[in-house]
Image (cartoon, rainbow, N blue to C red; front, side, top):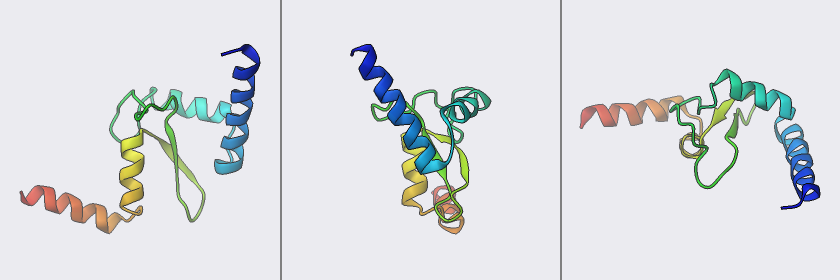
Length: 97
């Protein structure tokens, strides 16, 4: 990949972070540092699913950024629709086995 292409990808990522989540690349990087370069839920150092970056978890209603997650944890929250009651039901199910 040429230097120009790398610069363009970085610029596009910066614009995407700002537009979708209202954060800068520097804020994203600080979150990574604060999380010790790990998923905030499972602690994995691997963003997962061939991704180079952790997913930015955010509340879809308030748009508040909550943390950086690996693909698996981000998808799990999405499938559970960020519903605490549904998550508790899943925990109850596992504990009953």
